[in-house]
Length: 253
Ligand SMILES: C[S@@+](CC[C@H](N)C(=O)[O-])C[C@H]1O[C@@H](n2cnc3c(N)ncnc32)[C@H](O)[C@@H]1O
Image 1: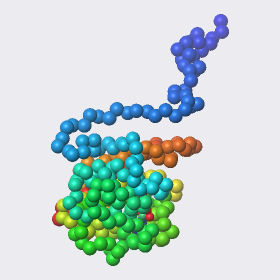
Image 2: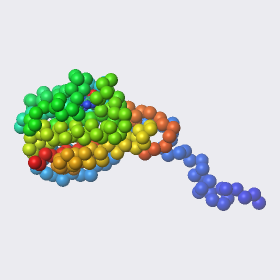
Image 3: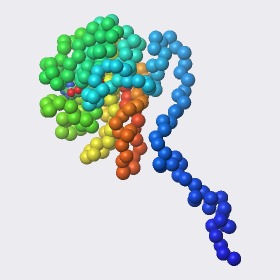
Image 4: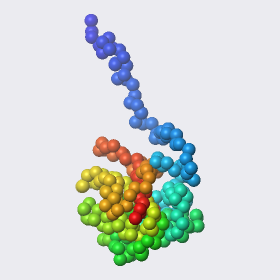
């Protein structure tokens, strides 16, 4: 009698002819995850929760600018916090936050190293106690390079150099906020080819706390819909990160 796999374990034998799941040759299909139901609160912006997704990026800024972020999160934060005075975006890129402020009728100052103003230099920074709300979306160290200017944070040669200047930048923001003012920072971790995994969200919190800011509310995990990396095929194995994080800090004193 011949001993076949089918005769020993017909179920396992049948598994061997099954297609891998999901089939590799199937076209990409989005996977829909069910989000937890959010409690009803007194919030003016009920859809603003710790898990943030928006099906459209919004018509703000220039999508072709490297690192451009959609304006809807900024709009939701401004509608939630309702700053009474000036808003500031010191690393404005294509001007996303400025355009959101224009639409909402909120006065806003926005500049970038591309206009020669270095947000990490206290001498370039606006006067103390000027702003109610600062929005910033800094470079994720050198994940993307921006200006040719060596003062550009993305041109920092080492993580230590980046953190030293990033820490000074956060202290500048603290000084320029009014008491009770908020600093919203959108930051992401990434894996650097040479230096390994960069926990930049951790460094942001550490530097903000060292500067004397306190965290005002939950982290907002922003899903990275439409990220260019989502269309790539990598030969190496890793756990893909599908989000960045918006942290809201407050100047309590
Ligand atoms: C992630 S991008 C911001 C993109 C912007 N949120 C948008 O939607 O277009 C980071 C920006 O920080 C700017 N930047 C880098 N270092 C800077 C510095 N030291 N001072 C001011 N801006 C800086 C870069 O030029 C770049 O435009």
